[in-house]
Length: 260
Ligand code: B12
Image (cartoon, rainbow, N blue to C red; front, top):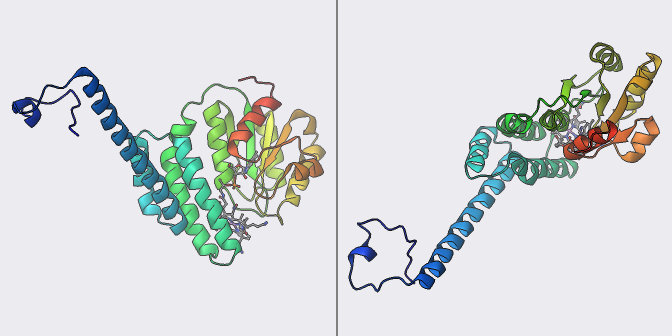
C-alpha cells in the first residue's frame, strides 16, 4: 500500500515519479487514517514501554534512571497523575509483596523508596502547581514510631494541588507536636498517617492529646495509611478515613463542605 499523508515535500519520490497515479480523495482519507493508526499504535507501545520501564526500575531501586523516564513520559504527553498511579505506586505495592514473602529486605525497600522519590521530584511541582486557591488549612504528619512518608507526602502534594494550605509535620511526629501545630496554625483539618500496625495506636494517643489540650472541637481529624481502615478510624475516634491521596482530597472537601 502506498502511503501519502498529503504533506510530501518537492523531493518526495511519489511526487517526482510520473508512474504513480494521482491520489484520489477517498484513498487519501484511508491512507491518512492508516498512518494515524500506526502512529497511535507506536506511541501506545512507547507509552507502555515507559510505564513498564518505570515500574521495573522502581522495583529494582534504580533511582538514577527514573527522572529521565518520567521526563520522557511527560514529553510524550502523559499526565503526571497517570505516571504516578499507573506505574510508581503499583511498583511500591509490589515491593511490599516482595518484602512480605521474604524476597526483599529493608535495604531493597529503601532503594525502591528512593526511586519513587526521584520520580516524585519531577512530578511534585506539576501536581502541586495548580494550588493557591486558599480552600482551607490542613496540618498533617506520620505518627510517632513510624517513618513512612511517601504516601503522606503524596497526600500533601495532591491537597496543595487542589488548593489547600498544607503544613507537613514530617514523620515520627509526637502527639505534642500535632497539638503545638494546631495551636500555631489553627487548621480546620488534622491529617494523621500510619503505615505500621504497631504504630497505629498512636493515632488514638494523638487524638487524645488534641482533646486534652481542649482543641478537639476546633479541628476535624482525617486518618489514612496502610495500617488504617474505616474501622480503625471509628475505633480511635477520628472523623474520616481516606484510603488514597485522591480520596484524601475529596474527603477533605466533603469535611469542609466544599462542593467541587
Ligand atoms: C517503602 C517502604 C518502607 C521504607 C519507607 C521509606 C519512606 N521514606 O517512606 C523503609 C525502608 C524506611 C521502610 C521501613 C520499614 N517498614 Co516499610 N514499607 C515500605 C512499602 C514497601 C511502601 C510504602 C509506600 O510508600 N507505599 C506507597 C504509598 C503511595 O502508599 P501508602 O503509603 O499506603 O499511602 C497511600 C495511602 O495509604 C494514603 N495515605 C497515606 N498516609 C495518609 C495520611 C492521610 C491523612 C490520608 C487521608 C491518607 C494517607 O494515601 C497514600 C497515597 O495514595 C510498604 C509496603 C506497602 N504496600 O505499603 C512497606 C511496609 C509499610 N513496611 C513494613 C515494615 C514492617 C517496615 C519495617 C518495620 C521493616 C523493618 N523490619 O525494619 C520498617 C519500619 C520503620 C519505621 N519505624 O517506620 C510493613 C508494615 C507491616 C505492618 N502491618 O505493620 C509493610 C506493609 C511491608 C509489608 N508488606 O510487610 N519501609
